[in-house]
Length: 326
Length: 305
Image (cartoon, rainbow over all chains, first blue to last red; front, top):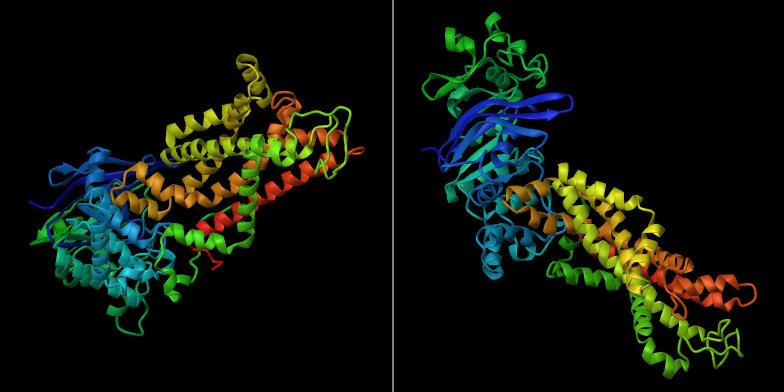
């Protein structure tokens, strides 16, 4: 049985200018110990999906319209606040994009590290302090005993992200949701943070959902990748499949847009057009207006993931019906 | 008035390891004591408080007169060896009256501070944090209290419950938290959008804990500044009420009352205005210095190190 089963999740924001359908009927599983990548461009619904699972969206304006997310027989989307507070930070942890603003500037690093232990395990200060110290060493911060007493402003961005990871993992959760954990960091630090996440995953045996807009990062870290566009899943497959045999025209276009994979000196490839307006989503495939392979029924008929090869699902109607080739 | 500017300052503690081994409060205390003006303010405020509250002991023995001891034959006299700060129109010793009046004024200040710190901060924080309908209701209550004509409110209180000094505190307490609640609410509404609050939610903290441990400490700056502004306000408010005959009544006095009485006769007997005015100014300055120092000391990113 998978650790987390998300079924038909839809989240919308009810704003003054109408309803923004950020996530539309997303379904996926996360197995114990696996790393699932979610890629997509800005506004594709990656973050909203994760925030919906954690119950972190401000309601109103956000509302989970439908779906379920079963985590160990608890539906994260419909359980009460008490129950989700029990799970958050203890069994499912989350790290955020910007480590510069994710730590409270008025509390020392040690206080913030111990906080999840105080609320979830109700242990005393001395043992919490020991665990915090050990954890800080684990995530590769030198002089952890000195660092515990410092404040976030005395840390660099990469170190703060390490602290965030330490905070998220100190309770040994079953699932870590990493919402673009490296976007705000520079490239050398990015690699270190990804290595750290991988290392901690190996030690703790937890599952990871890694959200990113960088296909390269996702492919280098994840076992399985899901591609999102316009609030829907476009393709879902093992990393090798996505990388070597992408089926969906959007995934292929994304891959062609990675400069490093293209011959040097050529013109950089881009996807023409702009992401769909989530106020008025077309009835059919959200990518149809920008898709080179689109035919008349693409814009009309609703799309959904369907397995087209072993461990490889795609939402492209043409792949499903005609098996168009690359 | 931003409390948490988004700029990241170079880490002073990183270069100075000796700073790393201290807790938040001892760190703050050390910074406070380094600030000379703040220390001056603290000394003056505590000295005045001690002197004023020791007035029943001090006046008969050291000053030689009590605040209500009249000497009509003497009348208003300028400062002399016997009456250090002179006497008022009824021949009462000004120093004794100042000490006695200070007690009322400082109590008013204390009461207003306490009320605006507890009720105002919690009320505003809950309203801003929860938002939605609750925020709407709570803020309309504040609006209604704001729009009550204050003087009529006090007169009603006095009419129903008789003229007691305690009512003065009730009246001042009732209005002193309103602005604080509004300020705190606004700050909380912007703070709750910050990522560290979201991160706290993601760690499974309860809302109560998020408000008390993550939101309110980040509000210390504006809270302290506003409190130091409230203190002079309420001291003056008390004198205004006393002027209308709704506050402290003779032979009792307060600094506000003394200033008012002194202002009436300032051309003939200037010391009656000068000394209460000086004492009041000194107190208010000291409170402000202390408040500024506290704000800087409690800011962990204190750039003054």
